[in-house]
Every structure is written in structure tokens, then in C-alpha cells.
Image: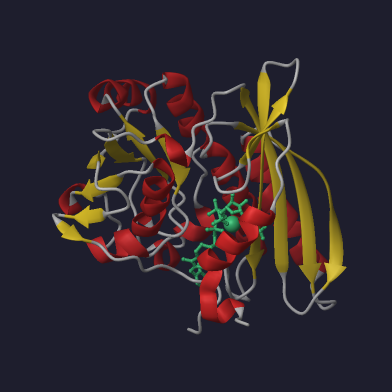
Length: 298
Ligand SMILES: Nc1ncnc2c1ncn2[C@@H]1O[C@H](COP(=O)(O)OP(=O)(O)O)[C@@H](O)[C@H]1O
Ligand SMILES: Cc1ncc(C[n+]2csc(CCOP(=O)(O)OP(=O)(O)O)c2C)c(N)n1
Ligand SMILES: [Mg+2]
């Protein structure tokens, strides 16, 4: 017998995911940023995701409630953006101790609603239950044209690897609370037809790129100098909670040109997809995995 602490979050998921069934209307089940389901007769697919934010894990106890609400919804919109979808419906489960101030609860909803309104998402329900610490569990859906979802499994050897913004120090800078999910960018990347694989960076570039490599059966080399950084290279690789999009593209110059036209910023190329299955190199050296792990002791 073993515990979550002993085997960790990722090994536990490898045990759980094979237990989940399939369904004829399910295109992509658990394992990507969102699940993708058919909506027959509509020409659209629907994506589904959920994430919690938990006191003292994802935010500190005395944090501004508006920022807590913003982050909770932002994480879910980021997963929806990472498929190239537009967010649609949001459900909110609040778990809270009885002492929570109603004014603070209202401010959390203000933070959630402001971000939902910005991207045309609607909160349509939820639940409220007692628990020892504050937790917001958000469930969200989105829409995109059928069969157009951008997956972690789409990378091909020779693709360039690109990232939508600077990485690292999100905890110190407060970006982990205030980031704007890359919804418009995700939709643009899908519509461009120039992207093979897409995901968002929650656990850090080094860990999340590895998910693309494993699911695509490829390897990668990163150019440390080219990675856009908010701090050191180590922080850019391992800190996590950047909520930028990570993508691979076979024709980066055309994509970068179109990106510049649309957003007026540079989309940096940070590496290349290789045939070395499962191997991630940084400036030639093999890079080992190291990331935030929910179940290991501090
Ligand atoms: N407890 C669970 N039961 C079933 N599927 C899960 C569970 N936890 C995570 N998953 C699935 O595993 C994949 C990876 O999860 P996670 O690392 O949380 O993704 P993300 O970083 O995009 O939020 C997702 O597709 C998610 O739906
Ligand atoms: C109070 C606090 N401690 C630590 C962190 C750092 N941190 C918390 S969760 C996390 C990784 C991402 O969270 P997870 O719940 O694994 O997101 P998912 O991959 O499921 O989207 C990081 C880097 C933080 N942001 N706030
Ligand atoms: Mg998650």
C-alpha cells in the first residue's frame, strides 16, 4: 500500500486516468488542459475543465478577496484558452469556514465576475459548503469549431517552440493572482492554422513542456537565452503559475508575423522539437524534472 505523499500527484494521475471510461461523444478525455466533447449537429465542440484555489496553497490567508476570485476564474479560463476555445459557462463551489466575512465573499465574486465579463463567460451556479479553509473550485466550459482543438499531443519533430510572455517569479511579483488568461491569444493561435500543439504553463516551463513531449512522442531543445524571463533562467524554468501559453509551430516566421500584426508584440521562439523521444535539453544538457508537487512535504 502507498500514499499520495509517497507516489505524488503525477503518478497518482497515471493510476486514476486508466480507470475512466470512454464515450462515443468524447473526443479527448482526461490528460489535456480540457476534455473535448462533441456537440452533434452544431459544428462545434465543447471543452470542460475544473481547478481549485486553496488557502495557503494557491493564495495566502490575508490576500485581497478580489484577487483570489480573479485567480480562481483565471486558472480555468487559461485551461480553456489552452485548447484555443472561447469560454462560455462557469460554476463556482465555495468551501469556507463559518467566520468568512460576507463582504469578502462579495469581493471574491466581484473579482470572478470582472474576469468572466471581460471574456464573455457567465457564472450560472455553484455551491456553498463549510470547510476548514477557504477554497474556490471553479468549473468551466468553452466552445470552438469541431475538431479544431489544439492538443498537447500535436507537436512534430522540427517544430519551433514558442511562448506568449515572460516566465518566472509569478509568486513574488503577484502575477499568479493578477494574470490575464490568454483567451484572445489562444483563439488567434487556433484560427491561424499554424500551431501544432498548445498548453498553458501552470507547473513551470520545464515540467509543462515535458507533457507536450510525452504526449507527442518527441523531444526538445531549449535555448536558455531566448526564454523570456521575469527573473533568472532557473525561475523561468521551474517557478510555475505563469499562465502563459506554450506552443509548437512548423512555420514560426509566418506565425510571428501574424502575431505582431494582431497584438503588436514579439512572440519569442525558445527552442525546437526533436526526435529524441521524452528528452528535454537546455543548451545541450539534459534537463531533469523538478516542479511544484501537491503531496510532497515542504
Ligand atoms: N482527480 C482527477 N480525476 C480525473 N482526472 C483528473 C484528476 N485530476 C486531474 N485530472 C486530469 O488530468 C489532466 C492533468 O491535470 P492537471 O495537471 O491538473 O492539468 P492542468 O495543469 O491543465 O490543470 C487533466 O486533463 C485533468 O482533467
Ligand atoms: C501561498 C502559495 N504557495 C505556493 C505557491 C506556488 N504554487 C502553488 S500551486 C503551484 C503550481 C500550480 O498549481 P496546480 O494546482 O498544480 O495547478 P494545475 O497544474 O492543476 O493547473 C505553484 C507553483 C503559490 N502560488 N502560493
Ligand atoms: Mg489541475
